[in-house]
Image (cartoon, helix red, strand yellow):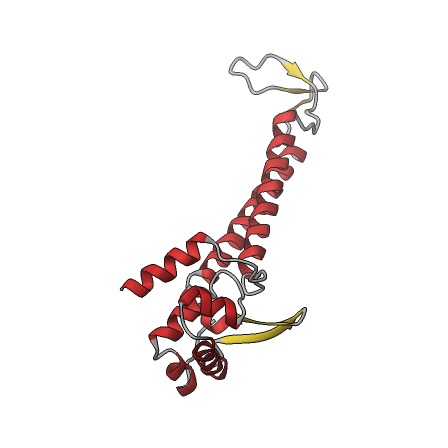
Length: 194
């Protein structure tokens, strides 16, 4: 999916403070007060910057239990982390490969291969030995413990990969801004120093 920036979006990105706000919203949705405390900026200034970001389509405003939270939109997530979509494609492709491998293992377990040639004289199936001797019964389709383990592991891997893709896809549904994680505080402080 391609991100298209219009004039309002570009104007919203033209401020270092607004970029810091976007980076602070990358992990959690936050209120104006939380952003002001985190960034060390006046609440009124944060509100003005958020208004510009909202007009540019880079943040969304939601009310939850009497508080107004601001969160990143898909557009701003794609600007900050353009590789999220790539992660989803890789995870879904890997899960598809696991499912296909599971189907191949199931097929091979159910169809062990062609039977040996029919020997008219003995009225039995014979094995392909160099001296032409030896007989055996028609092989039956049986699934051993290793095959079952391979099928289960491939199935679990496919489920885990799809779960990972869903979790990457659901990133915009951020958790509440109850507190600040250390990584966010360090990232914002480092960005301020630059």
